[in-house]
Image (cartoon, rainbow, N blue to C red; front, side, top):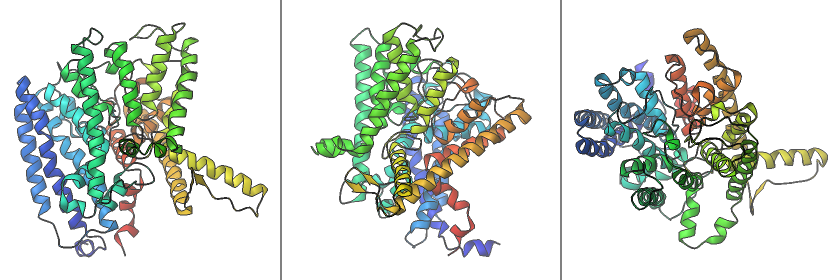
Length: 518
């Protein structure tokens, strides 16, 4: 059996060795919570030990390196394995810290759930209580940082800084980048990776600076100190949704909420467009069909939801009063929730799990749309929906006029038929996994933990994880937790977060026999 595995078509040793490199450099990222621990005098040993373990694991795996250059199969295996391994190593600080303060995080499955949710920018949590009083500032900033690392992509970051990985950067980025296509912005793929990360870093810094100004120069944000500004910068731009505050963005004043909204929308926009803006290629931005669809959807959905809330669809909010008859509050709550859920950020300013069924179904619809390709947003992606709808229209036209040749166009470009088949295949797999997982979660929760989920609750649990959205409905609302689910359901959700972030194919394919045979 071992001989068959060692003679496999895929050079798995090289993929594992590269994964070791990723893990080794993950220890460098832990310097941020380590410095935080020194500032606040909390959990310093936790991160020193975690860094040592990560370095040792990384060095050990690097010993498997071969002289063979990785090809498409190795790239697939490496990307899938690196993401799972990053989440596994990222769980180490939770486990170590949990033994001293929180038995919830001491459980490996809970720790892996929290870590996978962070790196995949899902924002679902198993923490029963979220605060820097219950958990250290260092552990909470690590929780936030995992989302920031996962937002633009850990492989993209490695391509930007490591020459040995940049050699095969194009195919690696193609497997990791969200959306059906990769836009090469510069002649060298490593430069493209650096451009994307610099734009991402720039918006993060801008967010932190504006929040700090709002706090220190005005009376509009008394709770948004520097720690909270950095923490929420780490989760807003990657569309993550984690917050060190139990009430999420609802813990802050309306001025903060209004300022977060445009940054959530920016995070769901194709980051390549910002590079075009910097290079004054304005027409490439204004004529982008996906951007038009993305912004148009946000505007229309916000206006409709604001009308629903203004008419009284939400009870008196636990945070922020009532929306009925209050135009500013209704508009702010609608814009925030649409901006958060459509591109999978997962922040909240009110408990929409308590809204009436009309408003909840409307939010569920927004969750299905997703952000733009090339953004940090999750979900199906706007460009896929545009192509799916255009393909459906073509099929109707072809049925009426069989002799007509009608290509699918995206702006001025004709979409390749192979790309259309890939998009339709992805969409089908997405919905099959979504529906099947919802049924399994409902049955498992009922039989194992005596939790009765309504159909919309079970569907939202599945959608919230595979779509990397985070909150759902019922007990999984924006101020709820996944802690009560049985471990079997948590493992399934960990898998869904993993496949959802890598857009299904790079993960599922490694479980097929044909992948390992030539």
